[in-house]
Image (cartoon, rainbow, N blue to C red; front, side, top):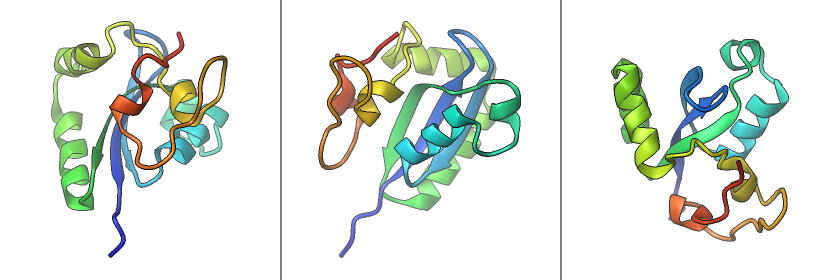
Length: 121
């Protein structure tokens, strides 16, 4: 049986900047789309492309429920959630995607542990 993976994520325009929350089944592809402005909309208009936080789920319904929950949260709660794991609001994408100096894309399932110590400012 195939194992499915879904991600709830937050991207920011800059540290403490504009936030966007989304859900996807391919985190690297989706963040690449945000970074390249491939899809018209909020993230393109406000230059929101810095991956600052994500969680992984095996069930799409749980991921969608979490996304909806986070979208209802107050901004300061979202900031606290980001800063628990990423206090410097570093861009997690380069280490996750295996781009940039000193980064190697992990093989197999991706999780926050895979990029620990590999983030770039």
